[in-house]
Length: 454
Ligand code: F0G
Image (cartoon, rainbow, N blue to C red; front, side):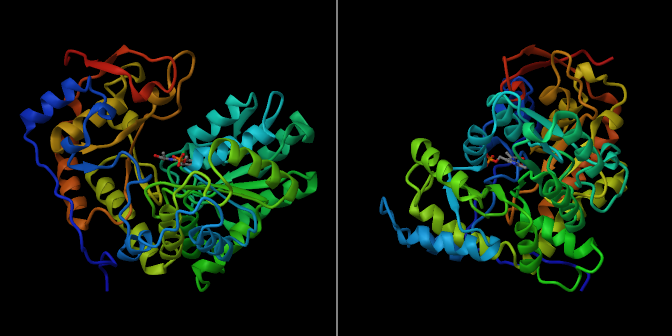
């Protein structure tokens, strides 16, 4: 069969509200041209993020009724712990309310002034938590990742030579751990190969540096390994996942992605002494060790989600549906980050809209156009998110992130039709001026006005 269908049928539906172009024009203006200010009910297809926006299965919903809400030693914790242990091989498993809570605990323990933490590319909350501790966050992606059209099969890889040079420059004592993010969100949802993980591990071993994974999208990464890495095609996803975790001394996980739940996070630590100190911080800021930042029912849904996410038919559908959107956009003429990533398609708005300079936010102009045309919500990852002061991002991107198990192929086809129209009108989009700039994480609350069309 050529068509990879959604490997589920729909039992519960959530109506979408259609809006008119006039309504959307008003809504966009009322939101000061910042889609974070648009109420979700006014969005038709919401591609702001794949985080916490997925649909749970009937088995997850029924597991929720089983939730044991005991303060200590709840049955739900043991079911969660056993599932995480079975998949990752880790013994020490801390539940947190989401990924960044795991990051905060970890970097409060190992970060601090003078420390340097390398990663293939830090996600913004990871970077923020490292910097909040006083440490420095360094991105060491491979050079191919900087070229949107380069179709390297593992464009999320870490530059191992650059890691060696960093260790030489700052000294082993300054590096409390080395992180690898799978898949690499900031580089376009691109995977990291097992070979690269092993090479990073070898460098870390030579210098006695622990290696941690940021494993939010571990299952999607494993599927790419199965598809693309020589010698991996016949292996079970479960075994590839286990290989990835076996290479690590720890992991931070946002369960809102491949946990297939709407809230949750996990911190994994192999070192007993470090794990004990993490337990103490967990109790201080999240909750007792057998629930952390979650309710018993959340732990149940997560235990079930972690089983469903490594099913191969689910992953084949997931990765295929993202690629389908990417291929359709490429065929229209959109420059995108190639090859399509696992959880999202990233459009190169700088290249699409050369008449809008970075200072007038071409990414934001495209975000507004997609909303205006069809009520589609995307997110700018360029000068709005990372600019300001002397920072200038290398690329002006717009991310279309795909929620898990939420939209069908006809939603995507509708989106593609809207994108065709947007592409036709691209030379007419106005640039924007930021009229309000908050002191940090400015993209969430900034306000804009559209400049007169020239
Ligand atoms: N690490 C990566 C690679 C992420 O993509 C995210 C979240 C986090 C850590 C933090 O997890 O949100 O549970 O605290 N990414 C979302 C996104 C928000 O839209 O890409 P969290």
